[in-house]
Image 1 (cartoon, rainbow, N blue to C red):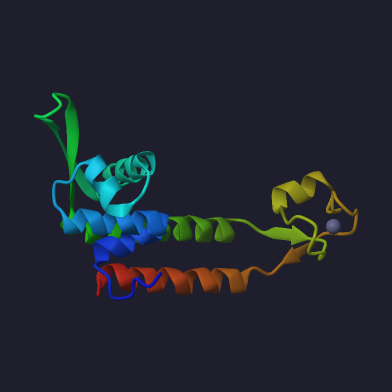
Image 2 (cartoon, helix red, strand yellow):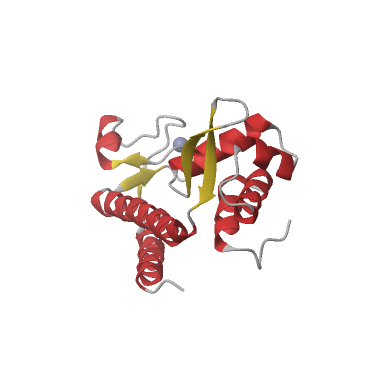
Length: 171
Ligand SMILES: [Zn+2]
């Protein structure tokens, strides 16, 4: 499904949940204040799938729901509305989370030395772990050697700089 020229709200929905989310997001943009049932009939999706999608989008503050009484039937229903102005904030929030994750990973790489026997199938060990096993690989018993993690650190720093750029200059 092509969503290249789609509204950012629909794009984000697609990234979060794929095809079903895209259909629900489009329905929300086409009719403001639609109910679960209206969205289900507009999208052809099952009511449970529609509700699951709506609750997820609601939990991420990308839509609002207003509880109103259905006058014909007497019970309460929700009327949903896309929060298009929340999309940028949501994207930025996701980027900041990713940045935080990268920063923690970099701190970890900088704060630890890693040792390995050199076999790709064996696990890397921290310095502390390596002392405990007397620098013998616990899996294959070969001698552990210090791994140079400079290239990992460089890659992380490069990615962090790129993210900071993106957050500071949103397109
Ligand atoms: Zn090994």
